Amino acid sequence: MNDHKEEGQKIDDVQGKVAFLQGLTEKIIDSTRTIDNHANVMVGLNTAIFVVVISMLFEVDHLRFTLGVVAFFSIISAVAAVFAIRLPRLMSHKDYPMSIFHTRKIAGFDSAEQYAQALHKTLYSEKKIFEEYAREAYNLSKYYYTPKRRMLTWSRYLFLFGVISSSMFLLLERMHWFAIL
Image 1: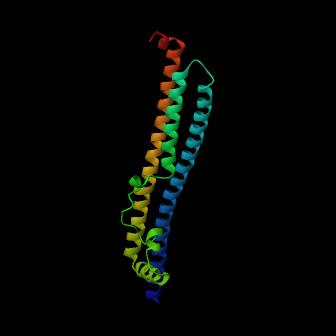
Image 2 (image 1 turned 180 degrees about the horizontal axis):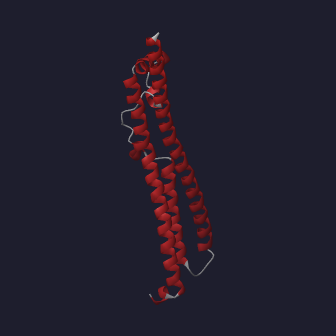
Image 3 (image 1 turned 135 degrees about the vertical axis):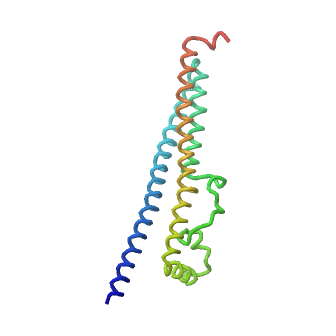
């Protein structure tokens, strides 16, 4: 009777730990989705700015340099934001050791039965469950979330640098500084 109670506690304990690890991976995925949403906003904003500025560039006789700076930095920022949404292959490090829960690893098995056997072997050992979840959480953080975050940060920096530099060039053009040159 006592053995059954300890086994029941052990199962509940493992289920609680697995639930914690699953929550951790979900948190990473949710944070990554937030980055994708912010990057989509940056793409839309910068593309709209680029289109408006390019259309203005052909219509005005003054402020061409300022508009050119705005257009340049808005398109570069948009490209960085697109890379935040869809990472270039060189940034995503495809050669990392994948967990048994990774879709490419799952697809690498010859049959569903082979995957079921490998999964059963993993799920049989508490230590292997934690190793696989830890590997999955680490890979999601290091090779998915962090590079996306870095590219979104670069997109924001480029956008801000474009705003600041175009403001300075606007001031200089309004002071007719470029006319002297």
